[in-house]
Image (tube, rainbow, N blue to C red; front, side, top):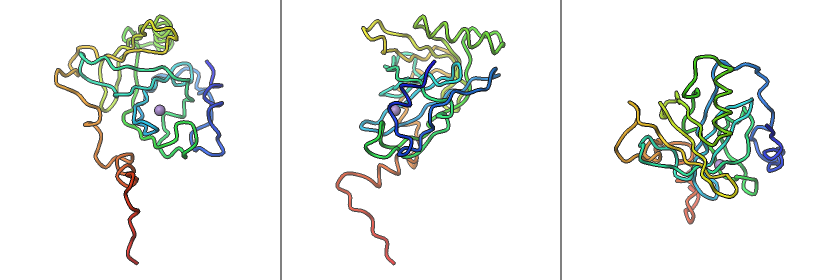
Length: 205
Ligand code: MN
């Protein structure tokens, strides 16, 4: 897997995002996942799963859902470096993805059919990725239990659906990831301070 596309899109003299290196840890006992909330030209979520030392990545416009009825469009994007799982902050305007990133959820994950062997786990995940039917179990703070990413048969093969499986963590109630975001999260605070037309707050000396 290559981080060439990731590195090409970014100028690391300008952005504080991590430059593309693969995770050299040979046999991770637990693979990581992260969901970043990203206000760029549009607010969206980035869903990332660690595989083979990089983060396989999907942009999810509506964010993940815990309701199995929701099929959330997930557009596959370039692999991101492993260290990106810890990235939060401002990407300067004019740069790729310019705006602000915060970590919405993070944790570890395994293949649904995992038998507790780290090597087999990654093999199962890579096979699922290849076949366009990736089933996994998330252990996050917000996202827990079984999920699937299912590839659609579109010409460029970039469109997937992110679907919650029915289990004890699923809900039948309407789920909006925005409601599961603190009102004073870094992005929400930034948005409130940078509303178009809002005058900068002048502090009294
Ligand atoms: Mn993004």
